[in-house]
Each structure stands twice: as structure tokens, then as C-alpha cells.
Image (cartoon, rainbow, N blue to C red; front, side, top):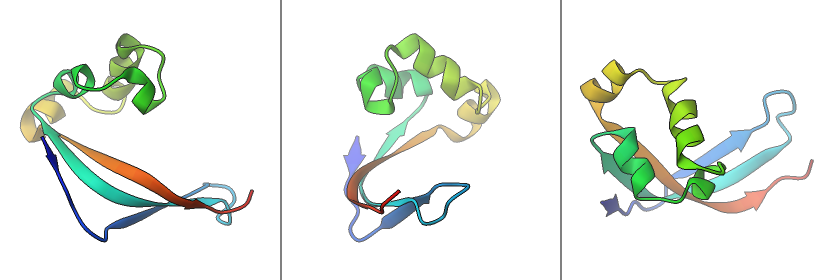
Amino acid sequence: MVKKLLKFVIIFQHADNKSQSTETSVVGLLRYKTFKDLVEDHPAEAFGFDNKKDLLEAIYSFYSKEQEEEGGVLGIRIQINKKMPK
């Protein structure tokens, strides 16, 4: 399920060079019970991975099954507004 939000902006900055940043807008929230459910609904390439197995392994290297069960999963869909020069 995707819920639209208006006027929420996230700016990602390079850890070593703050002048390298990307401004994005939040265009939707994705709520799921599990990461597997989230991954099944979207291509792995949308997350920067070649396959869903590697994507799930990467996700679970950050989040435990217990955290997943306790809080569920919230994905944030973004669109890039502008990239700052390198």
C-alpha cells in the first residue's frame, strides 16, 4: 500500500564531503509486515541489487527478525529533485 505525502524533503549528504548531496522528495510510504513482503512487491534493482536474495541478506544485516516482528516494515519511496556537484 502506498500513501502519498506532500512536501517532505530528505537531503542525503556524503559522509566525507557535505557539499556532495542529493535532495529528494518523499512521494510515498510502503507499509509491510515483513521485509520479504516488501521485496516481493518490487524489483531488486529498485533497491540497487541484482537479485532479491542478496537484497534480503543485506537488509537482515541491519535489522533483526525480532525488530521486524516488533515494528513491521516501513519503506520510503523518494524521487530525486536535484544533485549537488561532486
